[in-house]
Length: 150
Image 1: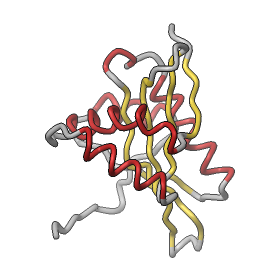
Image 2: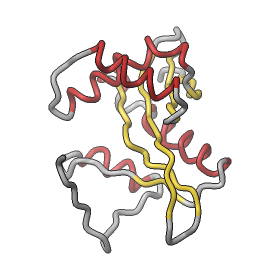
Image 3: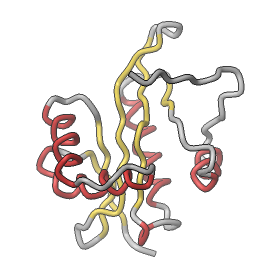
């Protein structure tokens, strides 16, 4: 089993995060564009608009990441975080990397006083759903989600 360190990413980690973010987008059917991925992630980090956790192997190479966006719950009158992105490279899957990233995100949310993390995943992504449920995440059976393409 590989040794993994999970830590919050800084702008200096952009070259580690961007290829993972580009691969994540490709997983969801988008064309690869490393420069666009680098620009997008760089803006989020530079403007402090998201929180990214990076999973690193013992040799310092990147194994995965998760990205959280801050938000609020009007009903709870409290901070929440949207876990918008979670990706583990193919060579590190099924080795605890995703679980470590989820745990880091949850601990961060707790330290920030958030009342919950929320996420969405493709209905076909059953491996991720299995992991989320094993880690205590509960599927929302009350609310439907809708999107409006603009």
